[in-house]
Length: 210
Length: 333
Image (cartoon, rainbow over all chains, first blue to last red):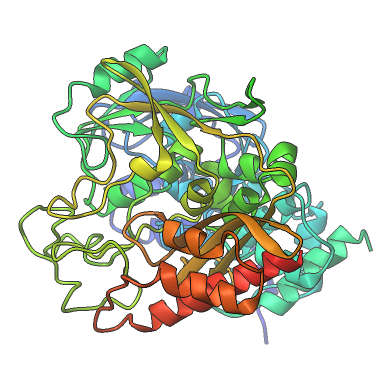
């Protein structure tokens, strides 16, 4: 018999579980940061990540992520992707190829979709960043998120946040009416499971406002 | 990735001053301008590019597309590829440029990549991208394993015994057919370079890809006034339908009057070590009837000097058919 009480335990996320069972005390401290409730602007000395070592040569950058301002200190090499995932701990954005070839890292910068892996955080000082966490909530999904659920637009889910961020941006771009037009403009998002037909169906449903 | 100093200059002159301190020209230099980052950061992660300083030019005033007094178009260095492709003037007067840009990369990358960055886009040759392998372009004098190795996607025009790397850009091919001019601000002042003279053949110095000197900053590109009544087509052939580099592509700008070709500009992509303008094809077209026979003759002329490698001989016929079909499509449009 299924133990629903355990499966639904709200405080136990997969990421927290994996981190806290690891040996690293630093990992525990980072995983302990609830991203939305722990503005990094409040963190300690310049160049320091809470619970982590001081970063040599760190430089300041301010990003407005999902409507909230984050004043950060980052190594200049930090990509926007790594900044979101490792510094701000918004892990909904995924790292696939890390070379701009798969689209898993797609986020919006000032309303336009980009590959966050091929962009330095420093290039976006003052910019408005939207990640999958900023689109909707489990109780109030963005229509595109709801459509991906309704049409089963995923299997493993790893590419899904990038697919959805791409699809939401597509709604505001010049795009013809046909499935082929959607496929062309979604070609920067690779799905290894091959959920493409359902992804296209989900996007078309949202575009038609059905 | 090697660490670097990140510099955001207040104006173009400051950017040029910083970059002028480097010993070699832009590509592969130890001071690099950073615009979209889609080529540079990719290659920095691979340690193919290892600049000590990055000069962020994204805040410089080069993001405008505007008409020029002579009726042409001025395109700023940091205009994003997507903005350029969808610009109403480009769509109306220079559709081959819009088509070429939209045939390249993905929507995300086109939102990042810039005019100047695309001009300086580096080859996808796998040996260039792999620091475990020799490469005359990356490390002059180490040899070219592509010539005896994997060369299916590499060039058949403009090659040398030192390098057969393909220029991967689509935008550059349309720029070549449109006879664009690249405007550069450098330590000694500003100058204008016709796109045909901007990229260099590999010859004995494949590490030198353009005429840019240390400190030279591309500020904008200009297009001449549109050719009245011209028909323009960009056709790209590749291993998959989208999001892939060209095996062969063709940009054509022609005018036809009374069934005769009266003007022709032709450039090829995916087959040359630089964006490959073909005056031979143009000469074979002008004054001839706009029909399949003469289009094929033009294609034969364009590929006459092609030199196949062990795996890419198919590209010669592919490029001929690509150009022939592009000309037919343009003539019928």
